[in-house]
Image (cartoon, rainbow, N blue to C red; front, side, top):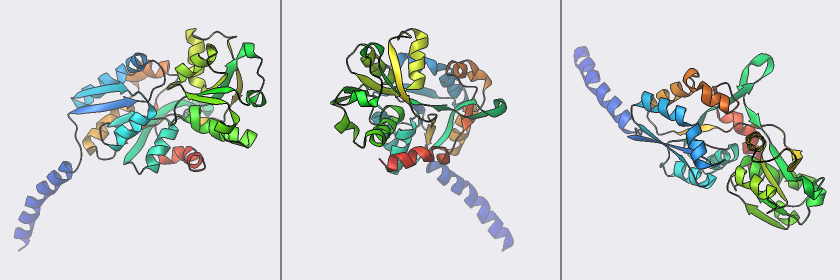
Length: 288
């Protein structure tokens, strides 16, 4: 009887493993999406080293696309047409609010105390043209405003909370006209060209524009900046097979082949993150 049971178990184990593997997704092409931050071609070029390493590890093609909007990435993850994505913290909170089956696993680091690598941060800032002589939020009543995207953290979620706290009014009530630029770069450009009176953007994107010379040091003034916000999470669909997920993790956390890419983004490495790292944004989203 014991021998018969052992034999039966031996027959069942491969079947159970096969069934488990069949229940997960092992895409022939890994689809990697980026939220729009700057020029699409530039973004994809920045991620080329990561794309190369992923293709080596996974032994398959990896398609990287810069989505036309944050919402397009959210919908792609919800309908399983995207496997891996870089999201903003607010768009991640939106995904969870819609019961999406995704998990954050990596984000860019920054140097913490004694040089330790900790979760990187950035800030939302309010910018205006220096020549306009606008000194604060009180000068912007009924003026025009550029936001980035409805699912942007620094370009929509945080600004709405700030204006409500500062003025006691919604952002729509306080400003005379609001437009969504679609990316931080386009919002910065709209303010610089005088198409709008003010804009909320990511400090990181603004500093990049200054360094690249797209904005002169005296063109714009920063009227306000937020408290530090957690860096953008990279997320994976939960239905991806464990072997695929493990290989992706190994690529992200193997720093040396990605060093130039990471340094160009002002980071030392990718560090592991969990849902808890974005609780502050989820709380902000739930209070909106």
